[in-house]
Image 1 (cartoon, rainbow, N blue to C red):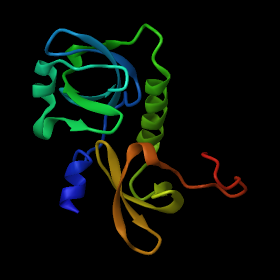
Image 2 (image 1 turned 45 degrees about the horizontal axis):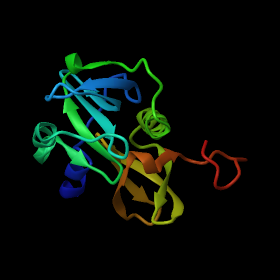
Image 3 (image 1 turned 180 degrees about the horizontal axis):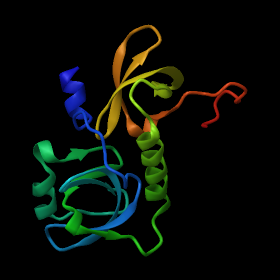
Length: 166
């Protein structure tokens, strides 16, 4: 589980601000829109949509290794609060969707019953441990697995229709 925890950014509790749309000034001086995924002290992890943003070589070097994580559709960039400003322009829909998912994840608590995407199906379990970019989840059969923040939601409330997000 240590490797899974590390891949999800390590165990962490974020300060307020997760899901904010921001403008990140990179090491190369380029301003790019992003979404705050984690905020703690002097560290902020920002999702940059790689489908709409190209990074410079200097930026790629800065996020390689343990301080950055690459996903299929985004790059997580470790920044300082001073490198961020509120995003004043319209954000791409892809970033708005990531921001909404990040806010849902931020509202979850360890020990809470959750729903999650397990392969192509939705399953329920318990959020055992929150990490920067997702969580360790215990399925109802006792199996532990790592799940990214975009695939975690509060458990279905009684009376809610199956397949709907709460």
